[in-house]
Amino acid sequence: MPTKLSVNLNAIAMLRNRRDLPWPSVEGLGRIALQAGAAGLTVHPRPDQRHIRFSDLPVIRALIDDEFPEAEFNIEGYPSEDFLALCEKTEPEQVTLVPDDPSQATSDHGFDFRASSELLKPIVARLKKKGMRVSLFADGDGDVEAVKLAKATGADRIELYTGPYGGCFDDPERGAKILDDLGRTADAALAEGLGVNAGHDLSVANLPALIKRIPKLAEVSIGHGLTADALEYGMAETVHRFRRACGQPV
Image (tube, rainbow, N blue to C red; front, side):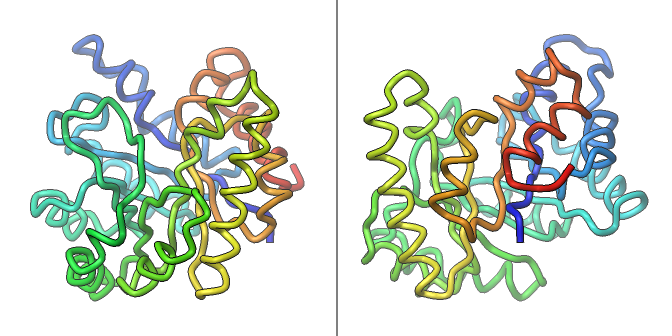
């Protein structure tokens, strides 16, 4: 199966929040993305609501339920009690847990599973009991033991942190080394029965090589690069471009 595309709406929400106005519309651009064939929508509601607001969640949930029932809602965040309660209220199809400090500008590392696996087990169980798929943000550094610890939490998937890979747009040699590490991490996860997602600084240019190395990559969540391209090509055509980069027939 081709890799699915989930469109991250955070950058759109951040642009909207620069003014006390309802545009650009997070709901409206999410609708265009789904009409263009995106498999789902992703948000990362932070405590300060600097991009996605808590009030956006029921709107996006209703958009998917009412108009695109085959699509998925993916909510990312640090597993605080407030975040877990937000997920239980919104009921996304997937929850992606990240180890972010609330003050971070963006996600920049995966979980240290040696230190966090016992902490994560009851959280994963709590979310899965409510019928949500759980994915854990993971460094793609080829650490097989860390992957086994991620599996032991009861999670369904890991999401490979691809920020370092995306940052190699002008250094192909380093990019190839990081791609190999990501691939070895994915191989270990798949061998353990974990699904593999990926996200952070992915683009039309670097997606094909990633998917060639990890042909069973289930899903990519893309926001910054996709939103940047949408300024040039429009949201619908940008989703088509990213879907093609994912190996989907468009």
